[in-house]
Amino acid sequence: MQTLYDHWLQVRKGALIPNRRDIDPVAIWTVLPFVWMCDYIAESGRFRFRLAGEEMNMFHHRNLVGTYLDETFPEVQQDHVIAKYRRAIETPAILYVRGAIHAKTHPYLRGERLLLPLLDQSEAPTIIVGATVSHMGAGTGVRTGATGQKLDTPPTCETIEFPLSP
Image (tube, rainbow, N blue to C red; front, side, top):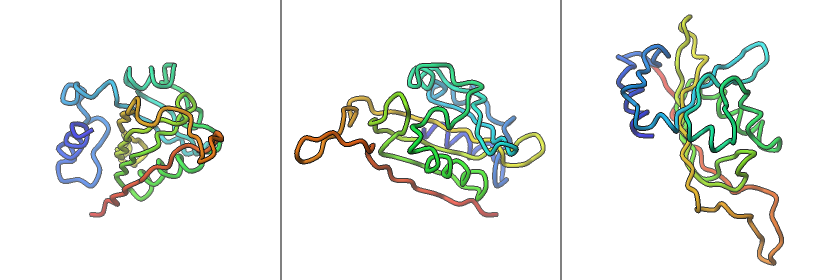
């Protein structure tokens, strides 16, 4: 994640947010399997995957390109997760999430996620580039309560938000 973040900072060139065209895959080749990119579709209020690295596709058990972000999360988590993505482009802000990594394919997994806003060709912040790294084996089992009952709620996560200002 540090590689992606460092590259994002470098290509800003003094601007608040870099342009999507400035992201160089060669410069971040070591983290590309974990990198994804989503476009915000204003008409529907949804995010659509433009790019997804192989680790992301394996994690979600499918090729994410062209699918909508909300299709990858359990319904109970969708509003909460989508709100974070919207803050990344509307505030704009850098978001770092650690703890629960919500996904339909792995509801109890822990990991880290980084969200970085990007400008589109019209210079509007409508794109997010990010990386997600799961920590397999760290909280991947079904959670149980003190009496052994299955808990339906996934583990919690901590979100650190860095608003960007001129």
